[in-house]
Image (cartoon, rainbow, N blue to C red; front, side):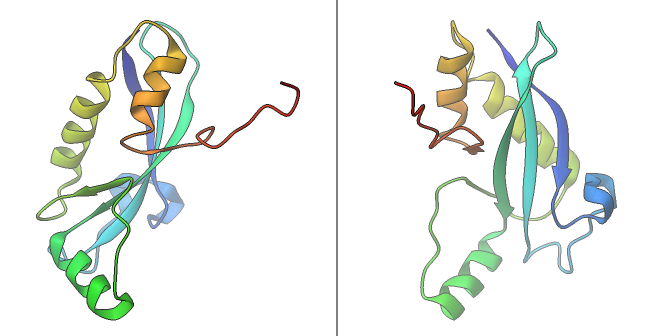
Length: 123
């Protein structure tokens, strides 16, 4: 099963539209990508969140907050929506596996999966 991105939103963008997002600085920024990912051979999809940021933003955040937790972060030198989307797509494609649960578990190592901490109370 091969996962693909079916939609992308950026929380900080006007109307969540990635094409409408322009960071204050191309070299010191962060934003949250909402990635809607599903199997390439069906219509279903699930939500994953990924913080995309620059090393300068990380350094500024470390100075002001004292630390940054690194899980679910993609660190890039500058903001370029096209190249960031290509990087994310390549990482996601590498998560192919036999079942959607196996795929989603691999994807959750990259981005926060909406069901990552879900526990079925009936089991």
